[in-house]
Image 1 (tube, helix red, strand yellow):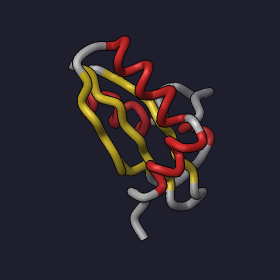
Image 2: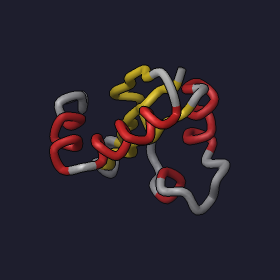
Image 3: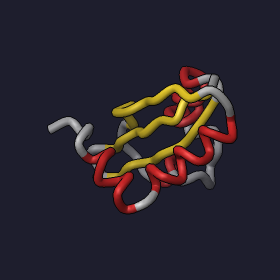
Length: 83
């Protein structure tokens, strides 16, 4: 099983969409900024999980990630941003 997820940085009003097999480990990597040149490490502030969806395999996860990164997908994700 894979997880397609979206995290949100309220300080910079940024959304990151990704996919992983281990969501807890991936969130820890985002928060600790292990990958210095990654998108999420460029912005200070807290990244919070706002959306996750379980899919059966990596191929489906990649397809769904691409859908969520489209204009319509981002509009869908924006509904989950906390006010």
